[in-house]
Image (cartoon, rainbow, N blue to C red; front, top):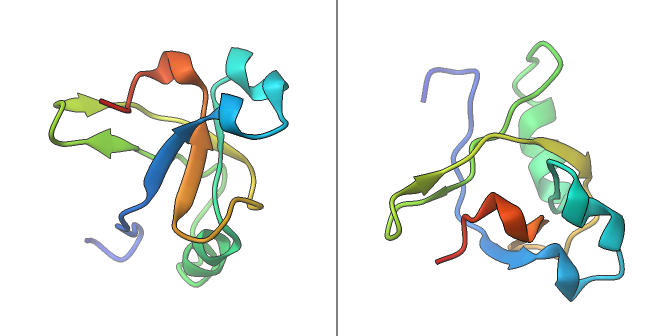
Amino acid sequence: MDGTSIEHIYRCYSASFIEKPQIESGDKIIMPPSALVRVASLHIDYPMLFEPRNDAAERVSHCDVLEFTAEEGMIYMPYWVGIPK
């Protein structure tokens, strides 16, 4: 890490698991409040860019956050992003 990034492991779920079908057609994810706390401590410039990765499936994507309301340890993203294996 270089002081302007964080790395954390989350369980990733399709947006269809929550009552926010509008994010299935977008490119934004929903993260837990603790992620906002971590990012806010970095004093970075906006906009923020997140890089979800699935190393086992060798998949990487880039996205923005819609909101920080997911349960701790989880993120929700559009299914089309294709990060889940």
